[in-house]
Image (tube, rainbow, N blue to C red; front, side, top):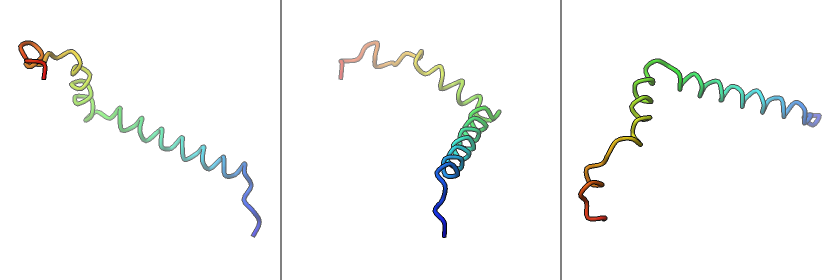
Length: 57
């Protein structure tokens, strides 16, 4: 068998990387995930009850 050309290997890796990126993009922007991500985006702005009167532990 002939050895596989490095250009071919790099092309396959590039295609797989693009497919994974497109899959993550599709998953993140699906309508069912929108409410969850909007709620998660507000988490840093919510105040904790323990932070107001806690004892520092």
